Image 1 (cartoon, rainbow, N blue to C red):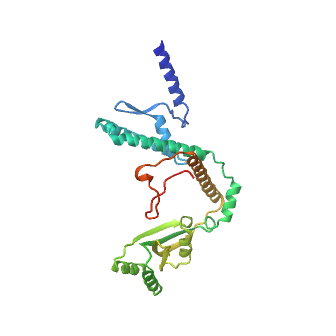
Image 2: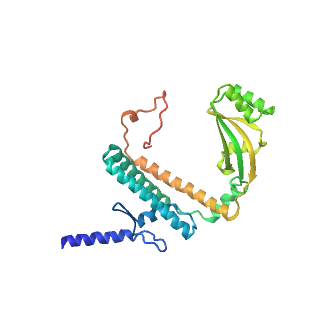
Length: 295
């Protein structure tokens, strides 16, 4: 009887667990989706991963295919996991460390999600005010295609020489030939981004540039840049789309602020000790990355 009662209790717990998550239309979360060499993969696992990545307003066929793709990944992962156990990799020191790190990250992620869920929503009225006060991000939004060349360090004589060549009609490729001749390292990339994704200082320079004309710039004392605008076209964000974007933007800021505030509170009430090389403090001679400490 004791054994029977125990089994019934476990069965009741199982029913409670399998019945608490959201169910898709026509789907049962508690059923088995696949069995891989005797190991069950449940529909609840599939639906959990699906809900985290589901595309909004997806058609029933697209949703079904996404769940099938998720299940396919789970099957392959289970096969690899079984192979790892057969190779005794679950007995290796790296396995224990990886599991500990994964558990910590999952718990940290859940805490962040819970803290973020406590933030009050942004009203449409507040969002519309943000839209009206930030035309650069909304009404005056543009899409730019440009070349960006990053040069480590700041060599003022070199920048002056490059600037003079650019003023005299030199192309970007001719300026790069000059860098190559002097064996100066650089990294070139073509950017295609909206104006709200560009640093304001760079956007201001590009907004005044003529397409095809290279510009020479410096960023503090850290590095130099060559910029060449290819095209710039208006892509205003207005109406409901602008309001929704502003709401999402503000919500992200509020969530980050709430998490940062809670982190500061936790740090100030925590007892943290560092050992070995991590106990070293800044001595004015070497630059050491800061570690979290109570204020």
